[in-house]
Image (cartoon, rainbow, N blue to C red; front, side, top):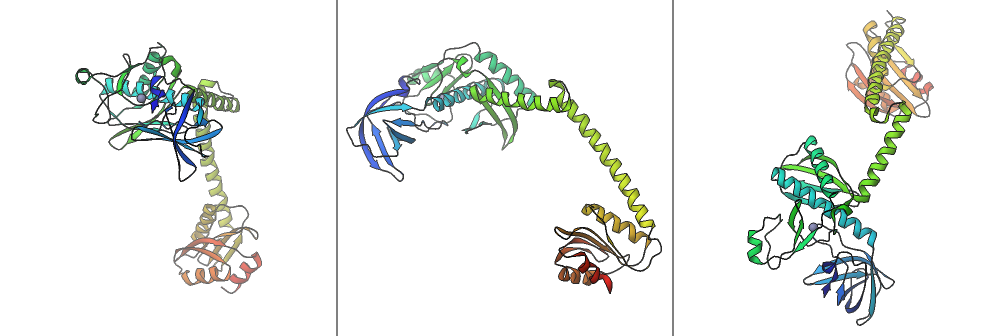
Length: 382
Ligand SMILES: [Zn+2]
């Protein structure tokens, strides 16, 4: 089995012969005398594509062989023309190569190791065994981009055991047999079996999106190339929409949002003050009424219903029941009586008016689903 992706990561099409074909759980498992399909491994997802007109949906390494999982049977001896889904592969090469340089730069500057790496459909995550703060992330991003724009040629080395001993390189595990070293000159040297770009400028752009605490170190989210371009384009579009809405300059949108939030906070305080005044005025109308008060007020929030009931029991010793809502959506309620014990009443009310809610003996809150006339009837003999 000749692994064409190690000859060149840029082989997009090839001709081969089927050497085995077995029924798999889903479709068939096919091996070839040679392949350019990269199997899942080293943190890099597998290639997809076609053998003749048959879809290759998964590629896995099995011992020394590469197994292609296909949707239809291809008899042994068949000549096939393989086509790699190049857009997918090139994107993965770009993300993977970018990750090498970021990990290499961090390792050189802080001595931290990459202890976990995941290439998701949207985001790449890199887990490190040390702490990095946001400002440092910005510096690394700037350094890595300056480096990739130098368009350095990426080297693939197969050192002898002797040479390997003298070589300083990153590796996730103890390696045996022939070791494949990927070198980004002055950027990173790492043992890796994946596919990489030939020159660093192909990575285009490296964007480090976020850094947050993760286990003993941090997790960095990053994207490269077309993914980074599309992310930035979307962010610019979004920012420009905010800029238009707030009539703020594009680099001053966050200050404009801050002002808006602060104004909003002031308005909330004013609203709450006038609401309290209104509730006091309503409560004053009922001063001295020792009999019960049952009110139906429109469009109050549950919190305002509570506040109104609280204001009323300050002025009156009788039973107070405040409702707000309508027959379609139900009514929120607050039922209260100064020094009262309303447990049984609330239980009866919830039962009679299809309600729920509870609270302290002298103050309960909840909701009922009933007609207003039913609510009035319930309270008529209380
Ligand atoms: Zn690699």
